[in-house]
Length: 383
Image 1 (tube, rainbow, N blue to C red):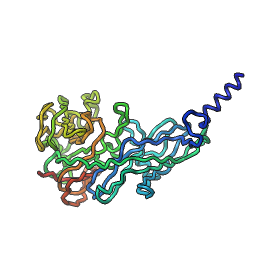
Image 2 (tube, rainbow, N blue to C red):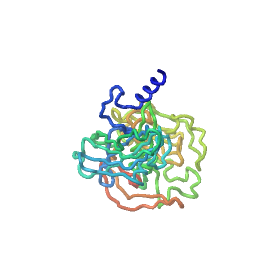
Image 3 (cartoon, rainbow, N blue to C red):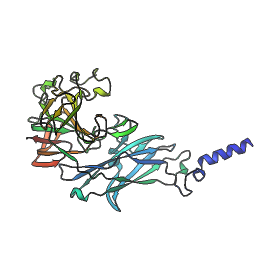
Image 4 (spheres, rainbow, N blue to C red):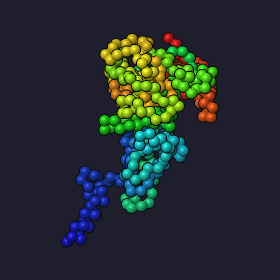
């Protein structure tokens, strides 16, 4: 009797057709694919609309899974295929700070695949919905033959709301945007955190600004934060709003970078910082400001262009810069909000020589309006 009971339990624990609420025709996929959020977009300096979204892929099998291909469609039309190295570059573990490219998913683990779909044409022609098909294989092993299908298709709604337009937070020429959208390996685009019990892409559209002069970020030998051309530059409020949070009292982070005892909790990561409510569900974050430079207080109403503080190196920073972003709440680790700058002059696209630190700018000067400056854009901001 005990042997028979044991056999019944073993069979029913594996037979999908006997599980409550599961259709007899249901396929065992082994993996699950979920949207992290809706598709959001920005019209960018390359003249195209960049549609950004992320797929959370979890391996429920006992053996390693390998991603073969991700195909994005509008209706039946294929808009993007990611495979091989390109798919690996767009995929990494969900572990905080881990950005190692991969197509492998260990058992009982999850990865995130970041999708950057580039479309031309007016915003009114954006599709209301995309579908993504994930194709994969599972290594042979215990119970691997229970998996019936090796592809999963899901839909993702497109948020076609026009991104908010704000003024740039800086003035003058040579402002070099680092870690901006939409490079999947960049720290901001790939940054995912568990916030309030939900995986959240907190920095998709955030930009780190440094100032470049004659191909260099620094004067002198560049060994002090004060050698950076951007250090101490005024930071301007980007739109009318109300200050809802001020965090101050932190020193500049050590430079050259090293252990930073001033960062003790998540509150300190933004360093000396200001959060301004611009509109419902839209908050501007100005982070890593110079110690003692903040000129506003909580509850104060600000006009566009008003000086908030000065560019510094406080908090979780490896060199003087302004971290600017829009967030959906006053928590700096809430979901990032897409935005554009109302007007600026694009100087070109910069890259940093990893050996010398010299900045090389591929010049393509032109005016830009209602546009998001992509990663590497070098701009002049005049009012």
